[in-house]
Length: 233
Image 1: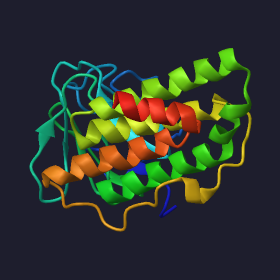
Image 2: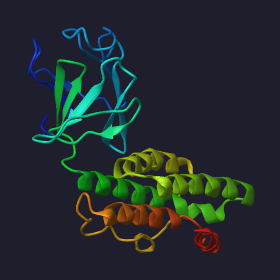
Image 3: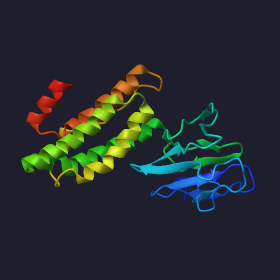
Image 4: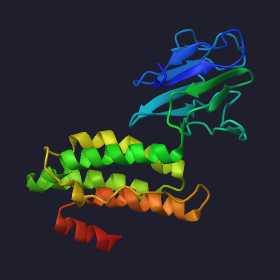
């Protein structure tokens, strides 16, 4: 069970209890029907927070709870989530609901770098399998699919933070599965994954991630469309 993501209760009457995370997602709250039910803390809202799985990674968002959802890494400062702000859960991260209900994530990715590489790998796998087929679609369908891809691309370009960028990219990966009939895009057509990302806090880090994700998506566009897309950028 070491590599299975799970939330482990920290403190309280259920200390040590492990809740294995479901890829279908789960709600945390005081309501007894919540998959992760918190009955021991009356300050927790009935439907307090929600877990979702994107690209094999888990994200937590506060559901406009009355007393807030908080996250912190070991030894780091605690911060409160804005309502409906998805945050990537990293291994060892502590989640606090309201006053007393605390959980630790075990079995998740260890860093933002690892998460970025996992999402990029999934994106490249989808592109290799599917996007080469776009050029062979009838024109109306081709234009519809390219418009869908361009929408994902524009959202990534507009991301104002690394967390937002990674979440948008993770959301976009599954939607590529319906983009086109399988093609045969060679791996060499895609930019290589960076050997090293700039350190957290370096202004170049977000620009680097923007460039890598956008360059991968632009590989989906047939050559003539890619030229037009570059001209617009």
